[in-house]
Length: 240
Image 1 (cartoon, rainbow, N blue to C red):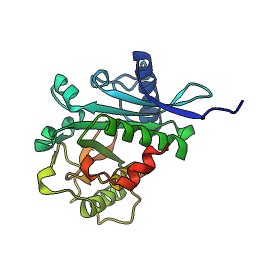
Image 2: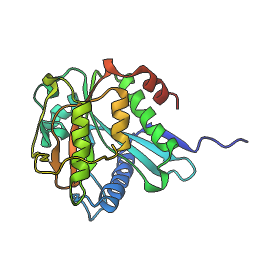
Image 3: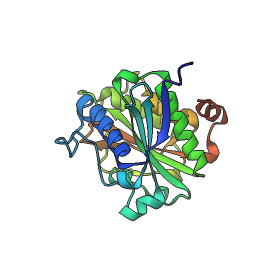
């Protein structure tokens, strides 16, 4: 009999599924990236938003292991907690009140599986979730690692603010800000692949970056109105 697909994507349906996603997130964010997370004893990246969010999982069908994950938090669920996750990083203003809003984040892939197949399934699963749920606006924090000299990070932020800034009504205020004025002029730098993917879909930057001391990243808030979704990229994402 022919072998089945190597990878599969689905939404978490149990607390055990969510814990597998939290364990992978800890593996990537804490052990690989050095983020300071609140539950090192159990080796889980978990917070109070997880119980209200939907979790996309990509599994290796040969082993059953979760090798990629995404978290989607609808605004209607976030209201039960009093805020969206990104409101710790930004004063969102009118963005928080946009209709059909969902916040995405906590995307990661196991270091042994960073291939087109796994990343493609994550994008395809996210696109199907957004379209199937009838969401109108998508926001998320795009994180850029901060190097010791901060110059490369500042260069990426300046590039994105110059070329992909959204309209004034989408402006958000960072808290605390990642300051760009005290950094030397930008030099050429590569935009992280995840951010490039959002921009290809039609996302725009909502303003200056915030500083995340736990993850040691500069975060830019991106906003994608689904009405602006690039149909060519949507077809490519949904194909898997």
